[in-house]
Image (cartoon, rainbow, N blue to C red; front, top):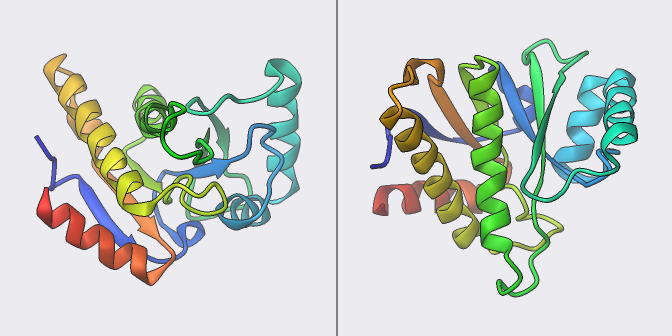
Length: 184
């Protein structure tokens, strides 16, 4: 089942979203980089980098598909950042699909466990990591739907997850996502 009443496709800058948590398409060292990762680190200020450094000093690195939560610090429109590391596209035969699926699923699980009601995702792995957008979008919808189906089947209160936004900076991604969501 696709939860169309919970999934919203948006065009814009994820750092400007008004929600409880945004997802950062992070690198394994949580050090801030380019694209979404760099923009989020810049918007949150130096305390985010310090907190990420503390996390990495404890765990070594964040594996692809896993997620961690930090405060959003200087961002006034968001309370939390959920950092997840997407897979690098290597042709699709190296477990990329499962790792990308886990990025969405584990981010939602972390949000749910922390009673976060609204969350926004970027297009994880579709930038410099090279994941083809259509495939990545399909995986995101499957992971979100599976998460909601699983937790709904366990009789959890799905009202805790009121809105899940997929925010696309690029026009072509936004248009393609609208078309693809309509088709499923």
